[in-house]
Length: 314
Image (cartoon, rainbow, N blue to C red; front, side):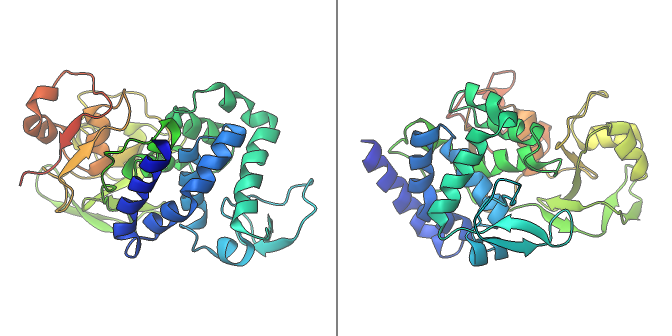
């Protein structure tokens, strides 16, 4: 049954693989990720998400020239071939592999062999959120939004199915527009005045709305101040009634979210228990009140895996 389900999922993925490099990546490397999960315990969803993120779905120079899909650097214990590439510093040393299979195997062994990742293997293999946050905490990447980016990829493409025995009725992945980096944008203030911002940090757009990823030590107040906003404005933009702790990697919107998702994104199926409507509203750039209006039966309800959330009216 599991093998048949894999074939069914692969067929769905193949429908859009020519247009979406990530779909092609999943179709090509999912069996390898599952094999590594069975060998070492690293969730297949995490392996695939990291591979797609670190290698730009197999299109990065490291992946193309060095078969390095996970951005693993040489370190002192590497005796194989090497190549230089710019990362946190110019011309850093990265591992080179004879093929992608060797890269996937080394990635699993790398996590298994480092003490700083030891606690991850105490998590359930289906706890992809715990794994994503644990990887960031252990220092796998310096990007403050690294964990959230992995989680988003996993949920957008339903990679969690590979961790728990894939369901036959899997549907094609929801095509979610990836956040787009912008250098400046016009945001509408509360009193309908337009101001322009141009920041030294990266600013993105989701559903046409500008946002930043929170970094360690920031608060709603500090982000509001650095963007010429009042605290009450940024709280309103992010559907919060009062100030609260701000976790690194949180998407912080700098303007009002839209009343519905972009065309083509009509529904979202909850990937795991514990997700909230607020998290979904942030992820898709849709106002929480609008989600509640479109999904009245889910107001006050704890979302469960498989719940369908309407994101856009037909």
